[in-house]
Image (cartoon, rainbow, N blue to C red; front, side, top):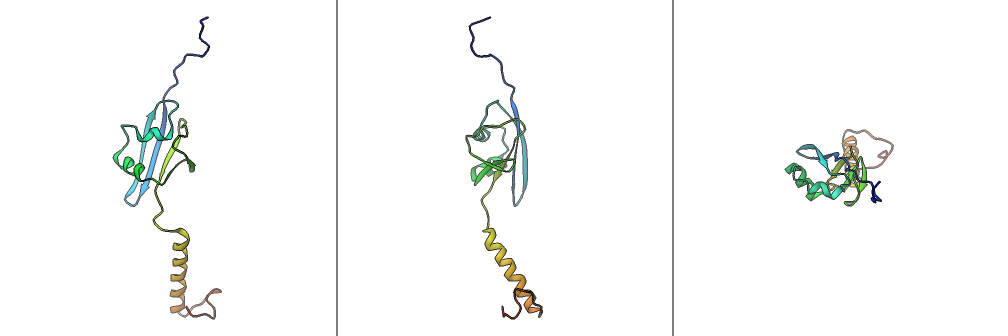
Length: 121
């Protein structure tokens, strides 16, 4: 036996998937990274598609299987890294505008519902 106090073995590389979607389409790529790689190491990968590089640079946040992650979080084999883009519109405001438009359309048709009954819109 030698004087080595730590085991000397080489960890196999890990394979991860990077995904992003925008108005023009969705992009997906499998990458092989060194064991112990972190989320920020994905951007440094030379094989990353140009579309994914552009999405990465404009990203609002990142997640792994839908769970938000920090750039220095370690990756595991099989992780799906999702590049999250900024919201185009405030979801609450967009829903209020859709409801308002639907109610106005119903009122023009002479129809009412429990929210517009007896009110002019």
